[in-house]
Image (cartoon, rainbow, N blue to C red; front, side, top):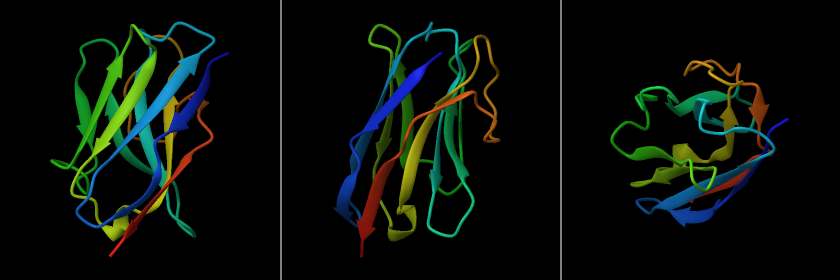
Length: 124
């Protein structure tokens, strides 16, 4: 059983930056693909970014490409999302997620383990 705890959300002005972190515990971390999703009020959860455990490749939603960067530190069992040039439409609750061991990186919300979410609010 893997537990995930996000942190780093908050209120920021448009054009600003935030760095989200997700601490994993309770299982082997290095052999799991990781991802960030977000959910705005009244909307479905949507894919933001993912990183494969096997070759380190990444994928990003078109809406965040070139602004957001996903990374991982297997020595600390952490996942991060660096968010730059934030826009009001980035406002949402952000969730980190990991797969079962040896799971593939995907853009669907089918990841095995999820954090509780952290609120990001971008003011105009």
